[in-house]
Amino acid sequence: MRQFTMRVPVIDVNSENLTEVWPSLVLAVKSATFVALDTELSGLGDRKWLNAKCVEERYKAISHIANTRAIVSLGISAYKFLPSTQEGNCMKGDKPCTNREKLQCDFAMKYMVQTFNISVLCQQDYVVEAEALRFLVDHGFDFNKQYSQGIPYDKGEDMTKLSLDKPGIRSLFAHIILSQVPVVFHNAFVDLGFLYENLYATLPASLGTFVSDISEIFEAGVYDTKYISEFVAHFPASYLDYVFHKSLRENSADGGCPHVELTFPKYPAQQTSVTYRSCTAPDPSRPLPHPEILKVMRGLVCDNFASHGWCIKRRECTKSHDIDLILDCEDVVTKKRRRYRKRKHHCEEDQSTKGAQCLPDTPHSSTEVMNSTVECRDDQRNGAEAGSLCKQKKMSPEDRTFGLNGANADQSEESKEPESREILQTISEKIAGVEDLSKPQAIYTNGNKGHRAGFDAFMTGFAMATFVARYGSALSSGHKNKVSLSDWGLEELVNKVCLSGKSIPMIVTKSSYCKTSKQHTEKLEILRSLPL
View 1 (cartoon, one colour):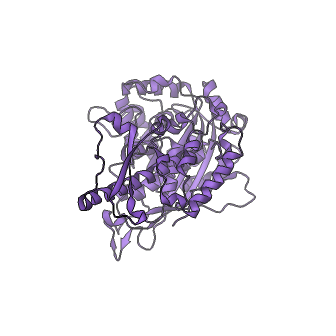
View 2: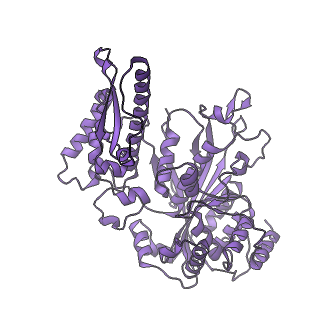
View 3: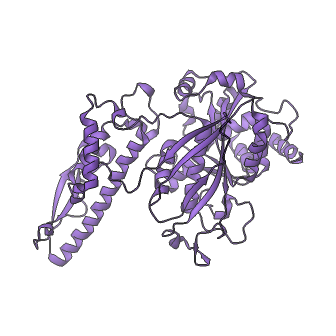
């Protein structure tokens, strides 16, 4: 069993300490296996245009928004892979594991991680939306600090001669480009548009030209963890908090598949610019809440937040936005489905060997599928030689909403184990001591621990690291000193950007029908001519 607990340091970077932090910031980018990026923005305009059916219209909307709004904070998390004595491979004896053998392997993929939360201030006038301001303030963003200590930058074309040695947000972005390090985003389309307009050059007129430019700017590849979580991992939800916490739990699961281990630099205690945030995955072997208690807990969850990661009521919402509660409910459902499949298998065996009568595998209609579930119990618990007894159990509407499939129907023997009785008693006492069950903090915290670009970038990078462990192939024995994501054979994941509401991603590749923009070509030539 692996217990996964980490205390994540995040360096706050502003105009007052940029010079001091600059050498370590540049070195972290240059030596990274991949860099995860996240932006906090002054607004996103009308969301309906960002979700337009035509992708070209979406791009025009992003171009307008990026031109009129600004980046207020930039998060960078640099992940550096640390090869082991086995050359970073998942090994069986003296040979790399095959993909099938990797499923039974418990190999640790280790990374050194450095994370920076950079406060920036655009020097041109820009729009600050009331909704964006409320969101950022609700999640702990300090606008006073941003306006007083934000690192200044100019949008669009460079207003001054760029120097890679001079600390600045545009020169940092130039280092990311020139280092040819893979970049990772969560929901990359908007971030790419804002980074291009704010830190590179004026956005081109057409989507095709923009995509061609991006494919050359980030030659090592663009990775989108939202696309991976939706289309490859098939997570039930794909917002960043959910993806991170689910990845954290799966990474700490006992046995099977390579897993991720992180180390962080040790910063002096007197370094006040470093803040820490603790992350702990629940013990995988702990007993989950009893189905009867789960049903009560389920009523405390905000459905909209559980599905999409946002709630229009924000702090006024009386229901829980706690990711652990949401995932606990899902874990109970998953374990119940596994028990159901196991019992169904035993039921089929009994039917073939003892002639027991079981219900059909598939109900006659889709309504029956939604409104019923089959539960098989073996009468041989009492020593009888009768076959299996199967009965049909109706689902409640709230169970169907969350997919609990009649979670309270199963009063199995395992619920009588000491551990299950203990957690049942503990949570029952919590519920009994609460007069108003609409207060979710009675059982779980509300999960509002702040929303910062730096930690969001770290969460994005961690999710990517777990996806590499799950879907990557073994490194070749003769890999370079600096390992890149492409060394793991991730062709299925690279340069595919999630488009909300679309069944296919946007492919980031240079088209034979669209040339790169003239301003990009000139800009890239200037960057490559600068001394490193």
